[in-house]
Image: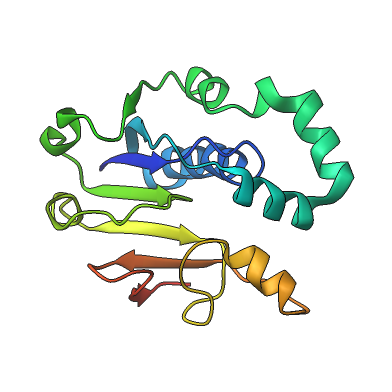
Length: 166
């Protein structure tokens, strides 16, 4: 089985999960991850402030001292994976069984959703359907939730809709 990953370069939330996902796909499912498609322009001041609100000063210190070790480039080099631009035409020519999507703020177009033989899987950092959309961890924290969830689902053309897998 062949797969690609579409993601942002989120050193605190996403990249550690990408590392674990690639390891599990290779070791447990004999899945060849062919590359990573990076979505630029994901961060802005609003997101930075909300992230600070969630992770606090200790999390910011971790980011400062571990930044290079947590970068997507570091993860890609560790697994010998190329990084491509998300908007490149190369993406539409990939022959893959699965696409894994992590922490992006763009709607994936229908032609990309239909491209992989087995579909697109998104790891959403919030409990669906309650926390659809961007900043789900922030909104759960803001709403005083005792627990925050992560949802893995098969993507469809809606925003954070589709069949929930876990």
